Length: 73
Image (cartoon, rainbow, N blue to C red; front, side, top):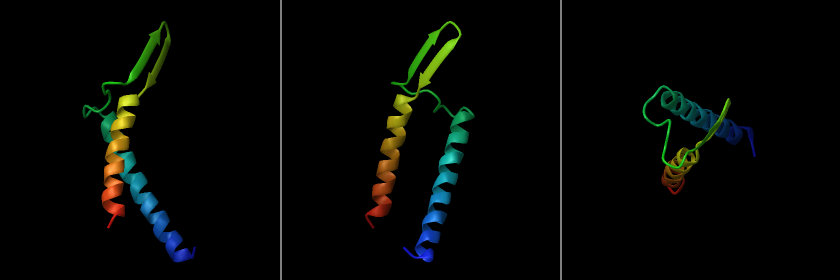
């Protein structure tokens, strides 16, 4: 792998991380994507456990579709 290809990969990764971070920031601001059906939430006294299973599945499907669209060309 030469430096030119490595540089392209790093730039592509940076763009992807920027987009993913921006989406997470906006979702955290209250755009309605904070709780999905299927998310797991346990509360007992002062303990709270939250696992975003529904959101993880949703993001996985969206990313799979996008990557398939871009990488098949």
